[in-house]
Every structure is written in structure tokens, then in C-alpha cells.
Length: 355
Image (cartoon, rainbow, N blue to C red; front, side):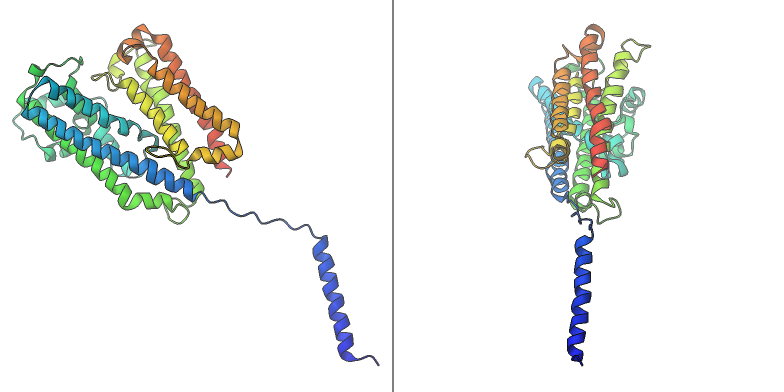
């Protein structure tokens, strides 16, 4: 009789051999490790969005200093410095319009600092009144008589050629109060991001706002689509063709200062900043995701951004005169912006959607 232990050992080895053969015959599906986009989201958050809002708040503070100096010392030099400070503070705001989500939306900062058009009738009525003009008054006022464009109106007036002697004491009071309010609101925005919302975007996939990193990336792309669409079909189209196919200069944003072309260029730069992960420093952005999937698309899109900015900058003279006298160049710039929009909608967004 064979030993029982030997029989048991034979049986065990037989079963083990069958299992091994079975495993070798199977075609197991390989486990694919989930790709992390934490570095992309961290750089976009910290080095693009937060830095842009911090720059905005700092420049709004400089603007307040300049208009305060202008009121105290009403010289042509101080007047010019105040106007330049407005342009300087406008730049980071326009470069933030590619990511108008989060506190800028939920806290109502966007309409409070960038309402357009200015309600000139209500503004002039306030200037003619005896109301005390301070920051609290501006904060409680309707959006259309505060923010960037109200300050612009006070500095340049409707026709853009306001002179030093045209200022009244009430206008100076309103200018100071409105600029202080702008400073406070932009600082509120910067603080909201640095204190909490930045962490929400960076920890996408681990919070209730962004259920996944993919959802955060899709939100970023949606913001880029929104500003490309606004520039191409709104900011350029409305003044270019808003009068039954002819120019309507009253629909031009930033027309008092003739800063419209710079606004548009900065809007496209806001797309480039998020896409390439760049503001003051260069880091990972959406480009680093796209180029892995399609390097040709990445190159094509970056060239489209360059083409759009160059076409806007190459519009002759002011936008106010160009929509009448150089309509072909304006249309060319518009088409370049719409090409950016088309690539975002038809090719960039689908790549992000499938990750």
C-alpha cells in the first residue's frame, strides 16, 4: 500500500499543475495605473491663477495710490501716471478672464468690478447730488456705476480726451472711492483663492466641488472656451457689426481709454497662460497633457494663439476707428480668435474628456 502522505502530495502537485497551466492559458487584462494630474493642477493654481489675482490686487493698490496722489497734486504728470496705472491694473484682470469660476463668480466680484456699459445717467446724478462719496457708498451702489469702467470714465470721459481742468472735486471724490472699492474687491478675490479655493482646485478628486481631476481640467477648458467665444462673438463682433452689419462704437468695451485691443490681447493671453501653465514662471499646463496625446495639435494650438494675438495687435490705430476704417483687419483678427475657439471646442476639449 502506498504511503498516505505520498498520495496526498501527488494529489496536491496535480492540482497545482492544473492551476498553473490554467493561469498560463488565460489572457489576463493588464491593470493600467491611473494617471495623476496633480502637478498640472498645482502649477496652474499656484503659479497662474493665484499669481494673476495677486498681481491684480497689487496693481489695484498702486492705482489707488496714483489717483490719491493725483487728487492731492493735480498735475499733468500725475494725471498721466494715474491713467497708466489704470491700464496696468486692467492687464491682470483681462488675463484672468480665462478662469472666471470660483470666488470671482460665487462672490459676485466679476460684475462688481467689470460691469459694462457704465450707467452714465445714474453716475452723473450721483455726482450732482450731495451724497457722501466714500468706499462704503460705492460698495452699496449698483454695479454699473463702479469698477474698472466707471474709473475709466472718470479718468478719460466719453470722448477720451478729458483735460486736467475738466475735473471737479466731486469727480475726484468719486474716483478715490471707486478705486478704493476696486482695491478691496480684488484683494478679496486674491484672499479667497489663497485661503481656500486654491486648495479645492489642487485637491480635485478629493472634494465635493471637483469630484475628479478630470472634472477640474474640464472646468479649466470650459473657461478658455468661454473667453474665446466672448472675444470673438461679443467683444469684437458687437462693435464691428452691431449696427445692422455696420459699426456701433457705443458697444466697444474700454473705448474711453482706447484700451480695447490690449484687452483683447490679454484675453487671449489668459488662454495661453492656463494652457501652457505660465504667468511669471513656466510650469505644467494643459499643453503637457495635450502633447502626450497629439503633439501636432499642441503645436497647432499654440500657433493659433500667437496668430490671434498678433492679428489683434496689428489692427491699425484704435479699435474705435478701425471698426469703421479698417474693417478687414478687424475681421481678420476676429477670425483668428474664432480659430482658437474652434480648436478648443473641436479638438482640445475632446482630448481632456477622454483622459
